[in-house]
Image (cartoon, rainbow, N blue to C red; front, side):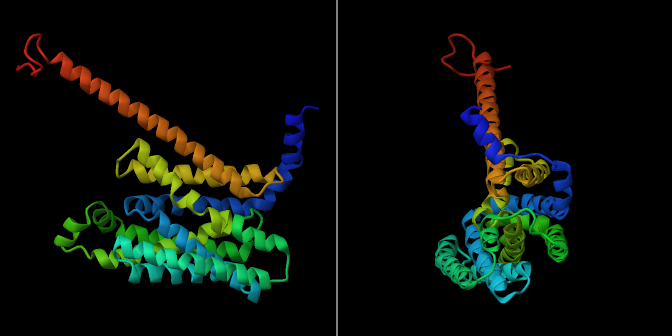
Length: 306
């Protein structure tokens, strides 16, 4: 047996895979809902330059989930409460980018410290502590499933209601405000929606790797399209492919789900970036050729008139 084969057998074991698949049915459904929500929310995270806010909210979400674990309460509810507190604080105190970054930078270590404190006080299974940070595929039981699907429905309805004005305010906030769009109210409302989406993601991929579902898929889609329709569709597809692929691979592996989700998501981003760069070069080459073809010899570089 070679070293590579030994490592493969140490990490992967697909014996009885079909039977194990039934154990993660809830996680697959939750992953699909999370991919849908993460892909749509991620579009506005990219448009409004909020990846740092996602990371900051996830730290408070981690603190809330840890507190719920310590108190024996519902972890999803604790995660949602922590996320909403962080999102509300960022939305109220950080209307400008500089203020927002300062608020997030202040909240992040506070939330992380609280979470570590609560986990240190928790005397239960170590796997529960690890799962909050890095995610776990069999953690979604039926009560948590209800919370996840209910919260996902709230996020999707909220996005459907404010999609057009939010897109306008995200693309050109000055013009949107001049035309009477309530940009400040929309910004606060989106922060609440973002907080709920972060709380959902923490249950699957853990607090440390939320960015991989709320930022990377939308960033990848933005590399290959600027269409207002195709961008959210591709972002959803990329997010769902990452989370569902990660769950299916982790099921036959001894490694947690997070490395698989991050690897798939990052691979998609690299492919989209290369495709976008290739398309841009082709377009620039075509434009240059078109200009050269319209220049008459000896005209000093001026395009020929028709």
